Image 1: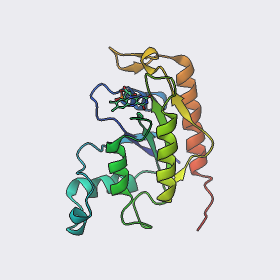
Image 2: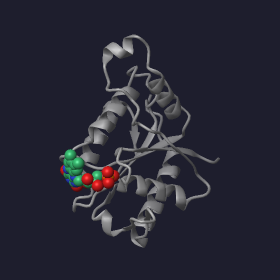
Image 3: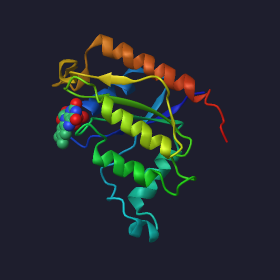
Image 4: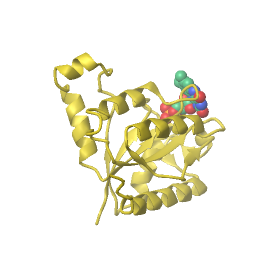
Length: 186
Ligand SMILES: Cc1cc2nc3c(=O)[nH]c(=O)nc-3n(C[C@H](O)[C@H](O)[C@H](O)COP(=O)(O)O)c2cc1C
């Protein structure tokens, strides 16, 4: 059956490299349905806000998560860690705990940086955070894209590096296959 995959970009920057990489996923497969799940309008997480009922942006964000078969997060690394805007979004999505929109949701992690370590630290942190939220994170596989500025056509905003395209294609196939084989650990 056709899968619907949500894409969350951990950068709010207009010309984000990570958004270009996420767009490359959309462009490489006609059989998967992709939906952007935006995080830029979410308020800063605050339990007081939550007590009054989720703001509309938050409830829509949670519904968008619920409506997809899996999510791929494509994010930069800030100061050897997860960007604050992404952590904020995950904190909202983690509520109510044990019965959250993200609970048991299959999630894949991809990251790109002009630097040399491909967001390795950020991805480790994100994986740890998601596992604390009882999210299924695709095991073993990592997509760490270093020197990303040399792998795209910045004017056209497209990924041009063939090796990276193959790498992403393979990851996408593994992710889709894995969604149907996640063990029920309840
Ligand atoms: C506050 C800040 C901290 C950063 N820290 C890191 C870092 O730890 N590792 C890294 O590879 N790049 C780091 N960078 C550089 C980002 O990888 C770079 O700005 C990248 O283009 C951001 O992703 P985007 O293009 O998707 O917005 C940092 C950038 C900022 C603004």
